[in-house]
Image (cartoon, one colour):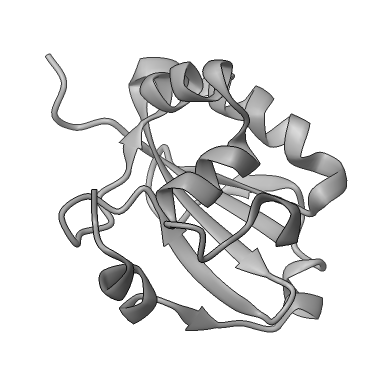
Amino acid sequence: MTDIRTIEAQREEVDLADLHTLPFGGPGHRYGSYFVNAGPDDFDRVEEEINKAGPDYRAFVYATREDENRYPILVNEGRNNGIGADRLAEMIEASSLPNLIEEHSHGIVKADEIAFIQVRFVLEQHRE
């Protein structure tokens, strides 16, 4: 797992009000990619979308706190290269998305302090 300093270094300041104007889902910037955006009332819907994506997609997860700091979650060796959506779904089965966010951010983003979650799904390129 990546250390706290790396996660902090990738922090972005965002406008929470702007995030809440985003639609729940929509097409991404590249062919076959798409995204979901959700406030706390829709976290269950995000988990459903992760389950639907399955092995064909990588998921890039971002969590924003009330203080308008957004963090990439599930950063691997300092790189935000996503995680297989099917693997993420397995991890959620054993816990919940907010709890995974807290665990994989080393507590920087507490499960009960998440103001917004964004997940970008990109077609998987490296599986056989």
